[in-house]
Image (cartoon, rainbow, N blue to C red; front, side, top):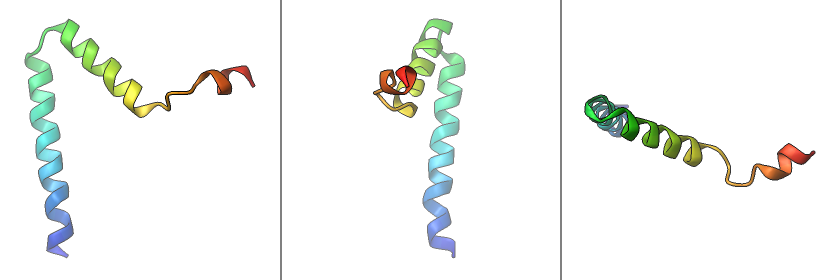
Length: 52
């Protein structure tokens, strides 16, 4: 039980440090990071779903 939870914990710590880095970045950088996150989350082909 202990083994699978460990990678998740390190991942969340990594996420936290990234968030802290974002807070120290300029608003423009944060916006660029948010845009990049959106692009990586959303599927690249959106035009098909918009048309239908």
